[in-house]
Image (cartoon, each protein chain N blue to C red):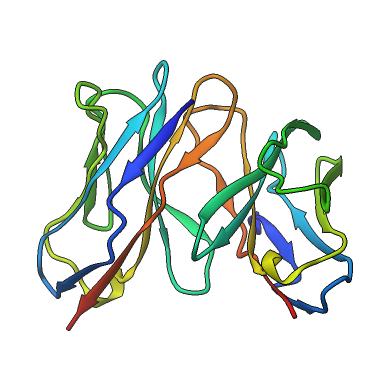
Length: 114
Length: 112
């Protein structure tokens, strides 16, 4: 398997624009996670899905952020409108259903909002 | 709720020095414990894991033992190399819903 695939790897956008980050989890994994990493706040869980259903979105910072998982092989994280403070590295991770198994991370999307 | 505490560093060591990064956790039930490593510009990779008390995880010379009595999972390596320079994250997976809780990360720099 190619692992968790995220796109784009880098995104530079202007404040106020809509940004969409994409993730393809590992086939057969039941859980999908979106994390945000910054120097100030470290690694933060934004939202996670189980079998395409959002389970906990309490980490989503505000209504400008939304995430969807229309099927088992694709998820998006959207920011609309984007702000400079959204600049961060966004990671997607997936995991099988067993609590004994680790989460597998993608390479991340580095977002810069200018 | 569940939480993970680890020394935040940065930690700077000379090559071949002994490494310890402390990690303690708070969780209900019997979580699985993990150490992840993040090299510059990359995602997090699993370094090692332990799924029950007294288990020892090991990989690439790193070791950590799941100590339930002290709720700890300290990472150790006997002789670090320059290539070990990275950020290390301690994490747990709770057994009430599949969620992963990460510590703040510890940046390690190894000097030649």
